[in-house]
Amino acid sequence: MSMKTKELIKKSNKYIAQTYGRFPIALVRGKGTKVWDADGKEYLDFVSGIAVCNLGHCPDAIVTAVKNQVETLLHVSNLYHIEPQIELAEELVKNSFADKAFFCNSGAEANEAAIKLVRKYFHDQGKEKYEIITMKQSFHGRTMATLSATGQAKIQKGFEPLSSGFKCVPFDDTAAVTEAISSKTCAVMVEPIQGEGGVNIPDDNYLKSLKDICNKNDLLLILDEVQTAMGRTGRLFAYQHYEIEPDIMTLAKGLAGGIAIGAMLATNKIISAFKPGNHASTFGGNPVAAAAGLAAFKEFSHKNLLSHVEEMGTYLLSKLNDMKKRFPFIKDIRGKGLMVAMEMDSPSSEIVNYCMDKGFLINCIQEKILRFVPPLIVQKNEIDSLINILEQCFDEKLGQHI
Image (cartoon, rainbow, N blue to C red):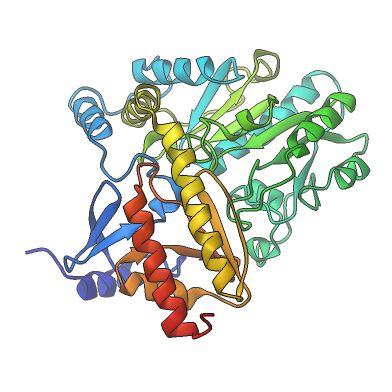
């Protein structure tokens, strides 16, 4: 007999490192936009495994691809050529600026690869250029290099001394980037939209200006699209909104629809700096993860999903903006596609708990910002259901309805 939620939590607390502030539910099943806990309670999911399950939970195409692959070949390592990895790389290259892909297992690993690549690229030219400019409120991962690149002190606290070679400047401020450039600067690393930092959206010309700055100063532009890629903003990749092409792009989260994978994409000119032995990953692009990624990619190609994302994102934003007119404690509504935030004027964890109690999963970042990143297949009636619950919450818990 399966364990219930309280039993699972007790066992989890006994055996698992307490590195997460977990909610008091144990999710055991998912399908589409919904998940169920060990007690059988149903939840409408507007978290998507933190913007991972872009195609919903257990989509048929990915489940079938994984089942077929695990019956065929689980692992051989990158000592050998791997068919689904090759096919996934081909799809990524054909649909982006890039010429080649390097596969790993997570966003942090993809960003580590990018950091190593830009340093190796300039090293091979005999140039002492190794500093990377990153942005305040950014999030690039929790390894030593990527947390050093991250522009949030709370992520870095307790892990000093940080890795050297990073300068942090305000987001959406090109003048600050220009001022930070030195003879040692090799790259600018930026998220097109800051996810963990608060769904912060820059000016429409920001990325283009950064690209121009990089071109003028012999720098490379790294776009961290770990959270923004794979349709999340209404384009396959977020940079496609802005008429630019980066030199390097990192991916993870939604790339394989729920299976762990990461990727770094780059042009031939840049990625040729990596020679055999310079960088590696035992599990990176393994047959199962790559097969899942390929199936996910084909779903984007065969369905009118991106236009649906734009339609649902516009609808969600409009509904939240209507709420903002009636609730004075809502400071801001912002988003692109189905990467949306509601900023409150006070800590908002109680709102998350209220919604969870009512069967809706949302999350709170930066203490006061509610983030909505539902599966990209979400429908209007599901958005309406969430809006109704939020309005109930604001009426009952906050009592400031106008």
